[in-house]
Length: 93
Image 1 (cartoon, rainbow, N blue to C red):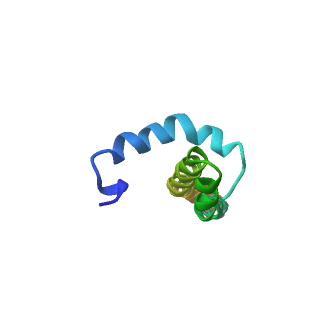
Image 2 (cartoon, rainbow, N blue to C red):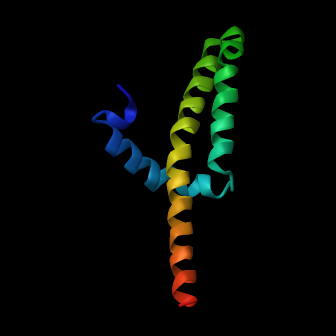
């Protein structure tokens, strides 16, 4: 079972869009960069647990957050591009 198919998906993504996405958009990172950050932090989890269990847990949580954040950012970028495409197509008619 994944988060997207669980009963927690709708409230989690609603909270993510309301509270977090506006702050993340200020970072001007692309979805692929969020994926890369998530993969690098996931690879660093054993090092974090070697240093201290709290560091390992933090790396896991931030990695999971970065993994769930890339899709809403990508959808938001695609919505903007679709609107721009519509405006341009109407302009050149």
